[in-house]
Length: 218
Image (cartoon, rainbow, N blue to C red):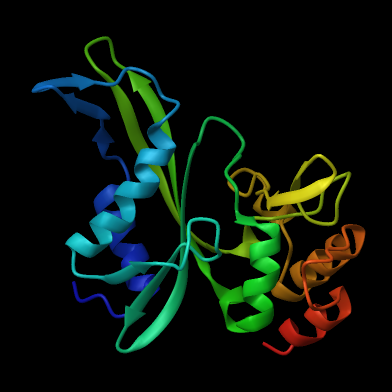
């Protein structure tokens, strides 16, 4: 299958990865050991997936920094697309960080088109069949940011706050309640603006209204 778009990559990922069983192995001092916990599975899958994309011939490269949105840029036919990669235990509600809030504001203000970044998300299930422990990838998702977020009782958009400062946007349970997510990009943009207004940031050189006016054009 020739991969010309992110959707092509998504369809191939669903075909090749859903239902596949895996294990996490540590190799140290010439000794291999299969890791028996499940707390690192998500992080390992998030590193594994872009590597697999490259293995199957996709031109995907890391972004400009670990805390800078987006994580990766994928190129198809000379056109670049912003990509984030996430994974979570599908037995639970998603709890991964979507994007650092300040980084998201800065990036989308300078490059509003990156608001259309798409999220490759692996929903995995930890397993113990009595013989080996590991995981199975149950679902592969390709979503825009507004399709995995929602307002909360505290904030207009799901948000992790540390010591009174916004840290990272957090996902809604889009897998079980997709109809409760934002219905479109404009709803999401307005929610981010309202959240920005709740947490004035002296480091940023633009106001919530300036951010809103700029990104709303894309």
